Image 1 (cartoon, rainbow, N blue to C red):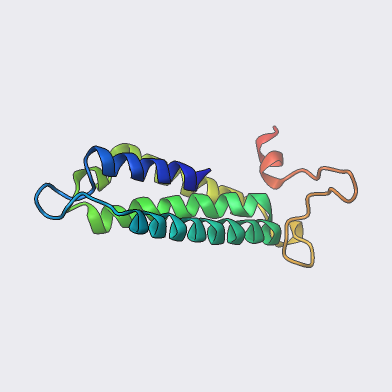
Image 2: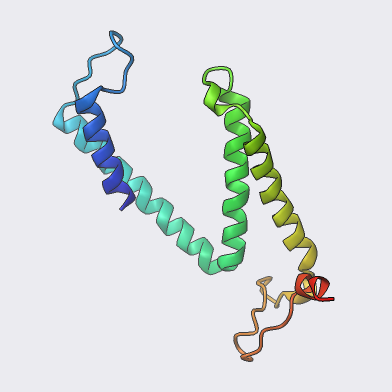
Length: 145
């Protein structure tokens, strides 16, 4: 789906206005160039999806979600550090700072509420699925008065 969406975006952008500032480079794209670009994009998307699902199997859904959150924080902070001077939309704003703090705060809270005893021998969090029991998290017990 992602590759199809990107291919449509690329085709319409090239046709409508091109990708280069006016006068720097021609806005034409040959079919072989377009095909090579879409083929490479499909390859990269396939490798990315395969790596994500392997990671999901290794560390579980919660760990994957936490890593995606940290990845988002890294993208926001690194784009502000490297691209703010070239493009104003990449600069840190109050909303971006609040979202970074929210993600980092949630990650720290989750890590604080999870202890090594909550993990099984493989280092994965024991969900209680084998026993059909849902063990309460420490965070849940902190919130219950």
